[in-house]
Structure formats: structure tokens, C-alpha cells
Image (tube, rainbow, N blue to C red):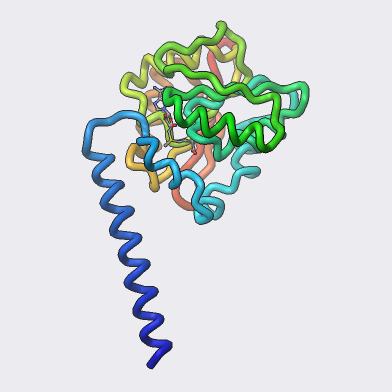
Length: 215
Ligand SMILES: C[S@@+](CC[C@H](N)C(=O)[O-])C[C@H]1O[C@@H](n2cnc3c(N)ncnc32)[C@H](O)[C@@H]1O
């Protein structure tokens, strides 16, 4: 009887959590689009995420390699940043560009605590990247594209800063209220001049890689 009560309590608690999650998902999805609210940042670091977004294999798929110059657009509070910077090594450089100062503040703290020195948090907007032309080998975006109001403009900027043949890697996850469908990502990137390369499906989403024109 006691075991049954415990089980019932666990089921109710799980149901409550799921309902809260669905509520926030819908509220975000159908309210004014914009950057993910800072108050929801905890969701980027839940232990469950490690199961659906395993960091190292994903970085491998994004094309993050030692010695490269990499732009992480919309890093939030840095779920991928520390591992990405370590993978790049001393000869590599990670630029973490986000539009929200508090996210970058958290990210700076995390990088400092991890002793990472080759990652550079930068405050900026995807619509006007404060980076030189053809200066980046790889740019990756995880659940960010749908938050950029003018996606063609954001992609034009990514095209400008990527070296010819550089990799644009876009990951979308069904857990994100701003989820972009595969066909949408492919079409909008193609229309901006990117050439589709490889494509990986995961448990709750996908990663699509494109080559910047001019290779
Ligand atoms: C859903 S979070 C994802 C964070 C991180 N990529 C991850 O997967 O954990 C989206 C991030 O993109 C940032 N972002 C949204 N619009 C942006 C823009 N126009 N320019 C730069 N960053 C932006 C948000 O501030 C937020 O930190």
C-alpha cells in the first residue's frame, strides 16, 4: 500500500513537471518571438539534456576541430562552450556571441571557473556580427535560428564572416519552442547561398551542416 502511495506521488509530481514545461513551452511559442528569457536559463543545463544532447559527439558533428576559429552564435550560458573551447585547444579560438548580457555574465563565470582562456564572450546581435569578413572556420547555432527575427539577414552575416568553404552548423531540437523544421532550415540556408553538406538526426532533433559559398 505504501509503495503504491509513493508511486502515485511520483506520477503526480512527474505530471506536474510535465504540465509546467508544456505551459512554458506554449507560452513562449505563441507570445512575441524573441530571445529565450533569461529566467528560463536553467532548462539549458538539466541533467536530462545530457541524454538528448551529448556534448562531445555533437561538437564532433558541428565540425569543431583543434586549431580552428569558431563562432558559437547564441551560446546562452554555455552548455557547449567549455567543451568546445577545450576541443579547439591553445591554437584555436571560440567566439561566443549572444544578445543577452546576463547570459554572457553567467558564461564568463563558467569559463573562468573552468580555467578556459581561448573562449571570448561577445555581446552582439546576429543581424550585425561584430566580426571581420572571412574570419571564421566554423559557425554553430544550437536552438538559436528560430529566435532570430530576420533570418535571411542573420544568415547573410554568417555567410560574410565564414571563410569560403567554412562550415555553418545548425541544430534544432523539438524541446525548443522556436523549433525550425528541417525543410525550413534547408530552404532558408540554400536561399542565402549555403550548400547543404551532411545531416544528422538525433533523439529529439537534427543537425544540418552547410558549406559557405566560394570554396
Ligand atoms: C535557446 S537559447 C540556446 C543556448 C545554447 N545554444 C544552448 O543550446 O544551450 C538561445 C540563445 O540565443 C540567443 N539569441 C537569440 N537571438 C539572438 C540574436 N539575434 N543574436 C545573438 N544571440 C541571440 C539568446 O540570447 C539565447 O542565449
